[in-house]
Amino acid sequence: MEKQPGSSQQQPDFSQRRITVVIPAYNEARFIGSVILQLLKHPLQVLVVDDGSEDETAEIARAAGAEVISLPTNQGKGTALNTGLAQASQSHPDAIVLIDADGQHLPEELLQVVTPILANQADIVIGSRYLLNTSKTPTHRRFGHKVLNFITSLFSGVAVSDSQSGYRALGPKAYQILAFSSKGFSVESEMQFLASEFGLRVVEVPVTIQYLDKEKRSPWKQGASVLNGIVSLTSLYRPLLFFSVPGIISLLGGLIWGVVVINRYRIYGELAVGYAMICVLLCLFGLNLFSTGITLHTVRALFLEHLSHRESQNRS
Image (cartoon, rainbow, N blue to C red; front, side):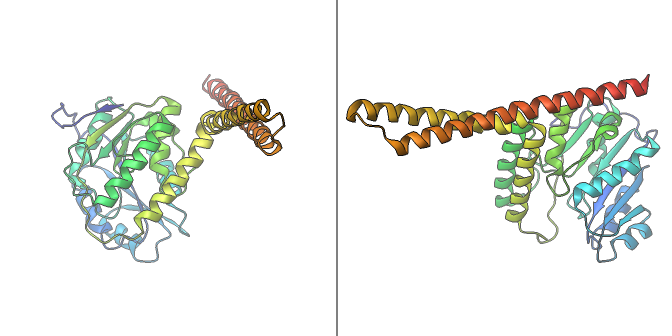
């Protein structure tokens, strides 16, 4: 993954390109209007997905000049993004920009986020608050982000410095194939799994995050939710890693217990039944996990190959 710590690169003609901004929003009446008005200073379209808000988010968004899709109930950020991307992709824009509705992202930085897409240097651009450290991120958030960055990068195979950033840009290759299974806040992490899956080019650019309001959710609960989502994503996208690694560890543990059983039999001349049972159980459990990982990995590969073959037939 490439990182672009500055914005000194030659910028394409912004005014002649079609750009759609998708904003997932849930109870963001306080900030959504100003975010949209700032965005519409640029020649672009703004699409707000009102995720079952109980306040005036949808009304204010329309009044500010955005197109609004209202979901009947709160279904989560992943569902809102799927809805927004499906609608926005119908007009085949040159880029789709994702931005949060809470005013944390600066609309004036949109150009530097979208430039690598318009210059055909990336399929996904992530606005990172940590490339230049211009954001005053609270210590507990910074620590949580580092943990989630490490885990997401390790399991997805795509390393980024800000895996939880909601300020992103997608090129046509990305927005045409991205569909998220995550409904909650692990959707940003899932994008790294999908980037690895489809060989998408990922670039990071520096952005500034401003914390204007108190936290609406407990950061620890949200972090735990994201971590749980990453575990689910790993089982879905990396079944061989998810099942086989613990299986090998369990099998090795069983073999170690087996050595203990043999050693005790050699010294005392009797079978340590308890230790022997632990040895057998660990070995059986490890072999079962390992074989499950191989089976799911093979089935998944065959399924993806079948889908690829069907898509090739449809194009021809």
